[in-house]
Amino acid sequence: MDLDYTEDQHAFRANARKWLEANVPAEPLKSFDTAEGAKQHREWEAQLNAGGWAMVPWPVEYGGRGANLLEWLIFEEEYYRVDAPKRINQNGIFLLGPTIMEYGTPEQKARFLPKMAASEEVWAQGWSEPNAGSDMANIQATAFRDGDHFVVNGQKTWASRGAFADWLFGMFRTDPESERHRGLTFILVPLDLPGITVRPIEQLDGLPGFAEVFFDDVRVPVEHQLGEEGKGWSVAMATAGFERGLMLRSPARFQATAKRLVELARLHGEALEPSVRDEVTRCWIAAEAYTLETHRTVSRLLAAGKIGAEASLNKIFWSELDLRMHELALEILGDRGELLPEAPAAGDVGSWLDGYLFALSGPIYAGTNEIQRNIIAERILGLPR
Image 1 (tube, rainbow, N blue to C red):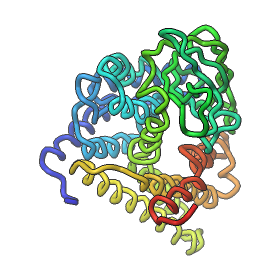
Image 2 (image 1 turned 180 degrees about the horizontal axis):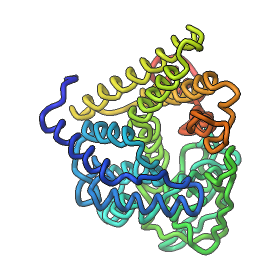
Image 3 (image 1 turned 30 degrees about the vertical axis):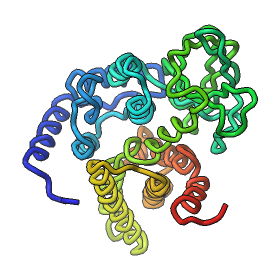
């Protein structure tokens, strides 16, 4: 791995920095877990798309810039440097998009990817069910063929972005005799079809970041099947790899948090215990180490390599680092860490509390860390079940 950037890469960074500094909203957008904020974020995504920055590593014909993954990492560093808005369509662009690239038909790529890049269509992730969370093979929602349609029945829960999404991607059992990971099909479902009921679920902050979705004899065109019928498990595992690996959580996200943490520690200076200052240093080092590891992975991918079970190592590392950095910030802030930024006595608390509440979910989503440790034990270390 060459740690020096080329002249072209430096030019790419300068171009991205110039555009972002000229276009990032001067005032923070409302949370995309509100109707007003969702609209604002869609408009921002459309602006990103118009500038050619919505999905840097995608082919131009699908709404991308045609850049490589290393240039995407550079763009992410610049994106987080200017504190640009969160990506409302992250389930689509970071998870489903790469999956469609791999498993979609030419017609599906042309139909879905450009609208996804522009956030004309926002996607919800619909995998979990009341009895199928980390044990995703226990899916009970069904989709049985009736001519050129699937008839879908059942329930999905904890559908991220579900309250304001246009589409949902999920797995459904299409073989009534099947068990576990067999007989599942990956299907793309418009959320405005007759028979669909969407009920928002409040997060810890009281906003509807999730939804439960009910299907009552919903007719979905067979053309919305992604991959082979009954082979949805392999498609979903590809999506999970993107979720746990590179795309969903770029290292720039954690570098930005580590930088803010260092600034917070400096602000409190000698009042901090040496052990706290040491822990801040360790967090900064960990964020840099994750960055270097991600660059190493990208170098391997650019050389035609693949991401395998080591994606589970990534997921554990970044989720636990994110939580630790926010815990440490609240420890430094003391009682004020429990205040919202707009509180009169908040002072320099910033968004640490909000970030902490979200970080609590990190070891759960994308497959709980307990499950990831099982994967590492079996597939990397070769330990028995």
